[in-house]
Amino acid sequence: MDFKQIQELIKIINKSNIGELTIEENEFKITIKQKEERVQTFVTAQPAPVYSPGPTQSSQATLSSPAEPAPVAAKPDNLVTIKSPMIGTFYRRSSPDKAAFVEPGDEITPGKVVCIIEAMKLFNEIESEISGRVVKILVDDASPVEFDQPLFLVEPA
Amino acid sequence: MFKKVLIANRGEIALRIIRTCREMGIKTVAVYSTADKDSLHVRFADEAVCIGRPSSAESYLNIPHIMAAAEITNADAVHPGYGFLAENAKFSQICAGHGIKFIGPTAEMISAMGDKITAKETMIKAGVPVVPGSGGLLESVQQAKELAKNEVGYPVILKATAGGGGKGMRVVWHESELEKAYDTAKAEAAASFKNDGIYMEKFVEEPRHIEIQIAGDQYGTVCHLSERDCSIQRRHQKLVEESPSPFMTPELRQKMGAAAIKAASAINYESVGTIEFLVDKNRNFYFMEMNTRIQVEHCVTEEVINFDLIKEQIKIAMGEKISGENYEPRNHAIECRINAEDPYNDFRPSPGRITSLNTPGGHGVRVDSHVYAGYVIPPYYDSMIGKLITIARTREEAINTMYRALSEYVIEGVKTTIPFHLQLMQNKDFREGNFTTKFLESFKMQ
Image (tube, rainbow over all chains, first blue to last red):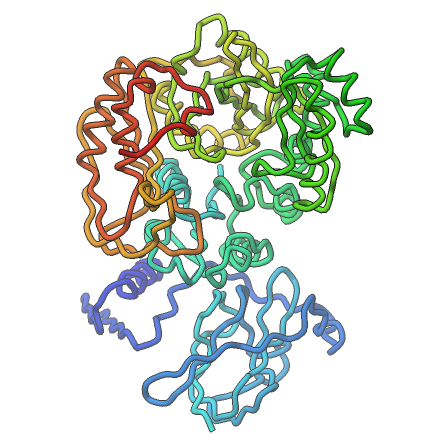
């Protein structure tokens, strides 16, 4: 099974009611599980992320609007989701050589920058609106995200 | 060849575009607001990107969000459909600036036709007949009186330059009424649009609305694909369209077609478009406006010319040449726009869940619709839920097929205009082709 077939499989499962699927083929075995939040099916051929040169705070903070607070939604088991307020490419760090803004286990407070979403060469810092502890990061670094897409699972304080 | 097209629209036209792209081997990207999550165009597209909250301003009219979606999906072209950003010159320009092909005309072409006074001047220069009038804004009652008497001729209509929806408009039949009409039109315009500028045009009595479909490629070749009669309108909204027009003659078609080509060539038009004309009872025709986009009723032309207009539009955008051949209609096609509105209650909108659906079929029936049983019609967008088109050898047969198809079209859970169309198909004047844009004003639901 090649990568493209796996991509197709993920898309099909995402749109279905299947909870878990295992395929065994000779020496190849794959298991795909569907969780409550949707499997990230949004995959395109991504070139290596190109960060703007000389990332000083001022050049990255060039926003057409002030840094956006990300909307949240309550989940049954008390975990809250931080969702994307915009469309673009999700980055966990301000440049490849810097540390990620947040890691699982980190405490966050309102105003804390949790990620960057880049669209059309503009880098937008996304701030948390809530206090709590980051439980899980739902999106891979440098992958495309759409409006309302769940980004972080947070246990509210 | 485009590899991937993003459709910056929703509903039935998004589905329409996706279908043709599929046939052409082009990948599709659907964009949708959170209210359209379960929409058919989202399911049928190869990829989909949620671009915002339900309101049009936050989603389908949101240029940065749409451009971001094009960027992350690596779309090489955008099809704007109709409405929304289809005639937004800025959007056409922004796409060009991003190296994404806007499947439609350039910003200059859109602007040239977008301003009514400029469009009219361009047409006059090109030798296209226009409704005679003041040319610019009226400066005084005196000037208006002289114009009406010596140049335009009564009856005249005074119109607000910033206007629409019938506001700031007054029809004047005799010189004795002119001064009063002038003052009230100006006052109404000022109150409605904060701009009291008015101009004058000859009032075309009982006009028919007959439009000509045209296509132009990137190399200056323009052709026409004959007419559609769209006179059945309620409050300036088209409800029924057909081709050929029951009022058309081969001679008139030749003249109007030539005028339409002149109009499009005057701005070097690229893509498909439509020139709208008013036609009076003596078969004099006058340029009204140009729609620089694909139109809702394009299906009617597709059926009598046997042509995929969306495919043509995409091919033109990819740089292909058109033959330059004009096309005449064969057979007869009628389209009824099915809206989620209650015709028994002043066509009040009726959004909600469709509980039961049966679409008509059989010989000579085409349905372009994005709804399905269980679908919830959102309240944020227009009320059109489908287009029913019938094709037959003669107009009478097309009407009979339409009546038969309408009676099979079952949509439950919301009110629709199907009862209205059923009654219209049995109306004597309609069946005789005896109607103008005033027709629906005196039409009453039984």
